[in-house]
Amino acid sequence: MAWYAYCLTEQQTLNNGTRSRRPFLLEGIQGVNGAAVLSYPSGDFSVVVSEYERNEDKLEEKHVLEHARVVSVCFRSGTVLPFRFGTIFDTEDALRQAVRANRRAFGQSVAKLRGKAEMHLKVLVRSGSLREAMAEVVLPDTVGGEYLVKLREKASKDRERQTKARALSVQVHKLFNPLEEEISCKRVSADGMLIDIAHLIDSKSVEKYQNRYNSAARQLKNCELLISGPWPPYHFLPGKLRTVAGNS
Image 1 (cartoon, rainbow, N blue to C red):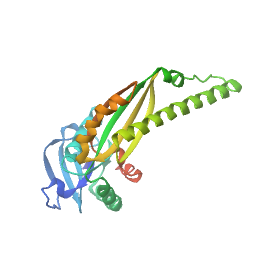
Image 2: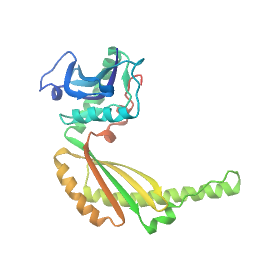
Image 3: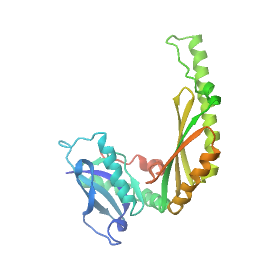
């Protein structure tokens, strides 16, 4: 029997403060394909899993939400380290080995993220001053001097967009004052730019963070803001943990 893995958490948060040596059912939660969700204990940790049949069960886009829902439910009880969607361990030994091999990193990450939450902030920028920077540069099909000129022009536009995004993100950082942040930026129209920001904050300051939204909306001219959360800390796992997976 294979195991579909959702996240790792501290065992005591899922079992009323007690430790167990055997997998136990998490009541009231449905996983991928409506499967029962179990806590698989390993020392101080538990891996939240469902039984999975590779030959019968197929993962589709709709299952991404089912995966995220299980992680979110576990997050209500304590710190979680989410696994990538589609992480499957073919055997119990493979599951146990993954925990053993990463036990130290898991412990450090849980300690770092305990009591923390992730908030999302989307900033849509529409401004006449952006039009020139947002203009799309089409590379010619031919090679040679014309191609190199357009390639340099495209690189220059990309740098200009990133510079504008960084300047705005610094202003956002001062307004929301997160512990950590991750930022991405993309062009969404001829004169628009979407800055997607993930903020790591103390779970006790969620209300304060949300209250800062109104102030930010007034100060950030020519911008549309949308906040969501709190979420599990998807963007703030150490790089090493992001590669931990079964035979997915």
